[in-house]
Amino acid sequence: MVATLNVGRGASIFAMALAALGLLFLAAASYLTLERAVTSRESPEAAPAVLALERLSPGEFADEKQAAGDAFARDPLDAASVITLARIAEAEGKTEAAERLKLSAGDMMPRAASVQAEAMAIFLNRRDFEQVMGRLDGLIRARPQKAANFFDLAAEISADPDGSWAVARMIASTPPWRAQFFAYLLSKGQPEAATRIMDGLRSLNAVVQDLEIAGVINHYLRSGDIDRAYAAWLSSLSEEELKDVKRVYDGGFKHPVRGLRFDWTVKPADGLAYRLFPRNTASMDQTLQLEFQDFAGGVSNLSQILRLRPGRYRLSGEVRFEGFASPTGLVFRLYCLNGGEARSLDETSPLPQSTQWIDFEKTIQVPAADCNSQLLQLESKAKLSNEQITRGMVAVDALNIDKLQPLAQ
Image 1: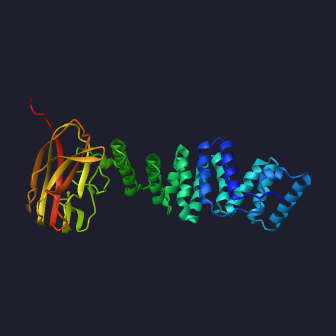
Image 2: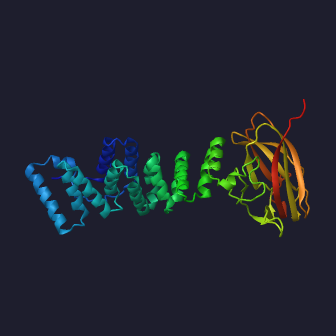
Image 3: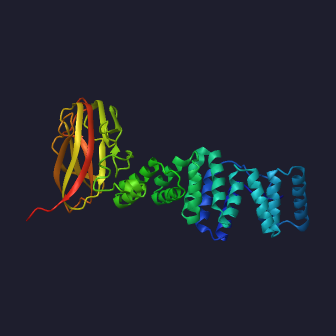
């Protein structure tokens, strides 16, 4: 009796074939992918394994070959017969013919994981990563509930420079699993892979979504790697935006509020809305307006992470209020960030509540120890309970930090 190739056996052969081709880094991922993702025997059950064919007598082998040929003649679209013919060609040492037949079977069964595994082995050997990603895309779409199980292979492909391009091109087409893939990379501690793919998207002039960039930045911040978080943010900026990278980024609010931590970030909350709005009818200069409608509790929703070196500085800006009512008023407070912990450093006086634009400023001293980065945040002057309400509008503009000479000793 001829042995049949079950899914587990197919996955093992696929992994061994990759190893033989010198693609060890992909073999392990591909094997695990198939082991986890294939839950049914969707591959043609009648296809015998190559090792089983090699153990047949010449007569039995000829009968098997004849039967497969007859089945193919009756139905050229019968994937089972095509797979069997591929096994026979492989047993006869006809590698090119076997590959052609395996790829044909893959085209016939685009959603069959074990069949696609053999096709992907061929394309990996050819370094045709776009074909591999196209077939992975089909498998992920066919089994959305198993999508994460296929992401390992896509992540491994992205580690190869050519593979990274192929993954980026696939992501640029905005497949339905795009957001899930980036989330998966970060959940597995692979922000570098996500960054490589985003760099590829930028090279293709494709859009990198702010949520994707924010995921990488926040991952690095949570791990305490603020330098990499900052580098990820810088790489997301356009040439025009880079011109406004100063001690305070975009203090004149020329650019969109993207919420990427090192630019202006507005934390959503009930009773809070914000918009960029012209300073006056005769000017195109923009301001940031925060509107509070029965906002419960303390305000701490507008912030930006800074990278000030130790020294003496002057924080300045302009504010304007309309219909504003708060138990304590608002201040700009500066924190030192160290290992994910925020320590209050200094704050402005309560911001002057006027319907006209009013300047404010504050001299601050950044210490040399435990203050490599800082958080600038607009806050209520004191802690408020949820029963205490803030109402009205505050507009902010012209925020800046100047370096001052150290005080004479």
